[in-house]
Amino acid sequence: MDRSRRVKVRVPATTANLGPGFDCLGLALKLYNTVECEMLNVECKQPVNIEIEGEGENTLPKDEKNIVYQAIKRVFNTLHITHHTLHIHLINHIPLARGLGSSAAARIGGLVAANRLCGNDLTNQEILKIATQLEGHPDNVVSAFFGGLCVSILDKKEVNYVKLNFPKDLNVVLCIPELTISTEKARKILPKKIPLPEVVFSSSRVALLLSALNQKKYDLLKLAMEDKLHQPYREKLIPGMKKVFQSAYSAGALGVALSGSGSSILALSQEPRPARRPPNRRISGGGAKSEKIGQAMVETFKKEGIKSKYSVVGIDGEGVKIEKTV
Image 1 (tube, rainbow, N blue to C red):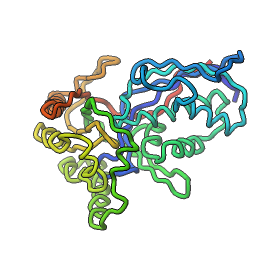
Image 2: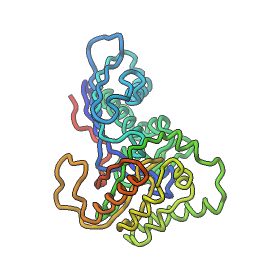
Image 3: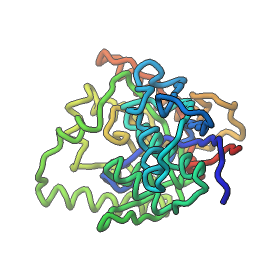
Image 4: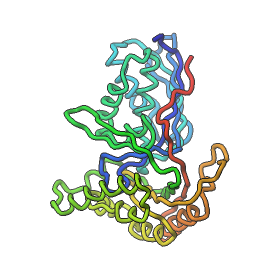
């Protein structure tokens, strides 16, 4: 395939784990980052110029340290492209360090954009392998790439995955506090050894969760989204987390979990989705119950002295999408 000079890629946010599915479950959300990348014909001292709009525009690096560029450079190195000058324009709507897959979206966006610039020489499996190496685990990158609900594992450095149907009658309510938690910090707080009964507790709930979603037995979601592998430990990093869970359930949530490594909280609710959603609206009319759940979580965080916002979001079923090439 011929190479492109300019490409625009859209990548969804993701929520990982859904409670017990530690490092193996990921769900893509209708909240997006966009990577626009242009291969320039001129030689410059710096190989890349980066513009950033939205999340991280004043904090993310705009040089070779930017992880989007690092992902692009990984593709170029793999395909032995040594001379290049790039202009990258990032439009970020995914909050940073909130457990919504911002780094996975950046890496998938960079890899897919670079691969398109190079004529799509890398296969999907090769892209996923690189993305997992960069990210450290496959849950977010697989769901960001394929969309929907994905189960993924890493076996002998190869990514294996299955994309599942997520019920269309469930709403996802995100509560996003003004509290950042790095993945590194969230992993350091986890113990190196877990007692066998706690492992059995969580593994049995993963099986129950997938079965309950498949058969729409929503009364089982509260039980199925319990976890003892990571949430009890990460709770120490998020003031009032358990109270936020309780407030969401009191407001009618079917299941509640920490989104990824936090600090965002995810709740599931059931009610008909509105027939039409206003375009580009961050907080959508997800229905009275979903709005009530979101408000309850925000109020509970407020009592802990933490500002937050909520958003009712849809499920992205497409994954990464190339919107434009030239």
